[in-house]
Image (cartoon, rainbow, N blue to C red; front, side, top):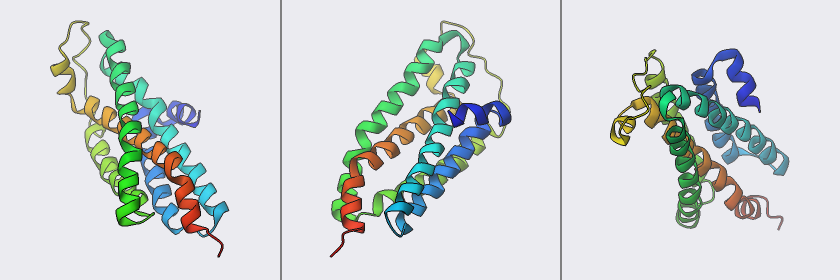
Length: 178
């Protein structure tokens, strides 16, 4: 919802970059949240960051592959679902062996690194030469903007499902009243 409205005002790529920044800052803030309401507030803000990544991603990738919109949407959907599959398992490992805050720290670092990468890829105006409907998968995956969007969606769902899967463990560990 917010991602679409903001994208109409400042553009898709800038909205995605803003979403990455909001998400990364929120992930870092989770580690220092002092209480359940602070944690919930940061969690709420992080959801807007993810929304600012997902919604405009579909518009950008469709414009990069106008003759293969089905393929474009499939790439993003597959990346998003794959992140949701991988995220909870990795977070579980990190929680057990490195503490409850480790997944949030790692997601913060990934978010910052990817925001820099995304800005580098989309900072230059790039014309698309992929308008034809008969283009190989290899040619599609050689395009940095497409790879950037696929990776963004992968980490978006990875982050979301880390939150959903491990929030009970975090809440019990961080806010246990003894």
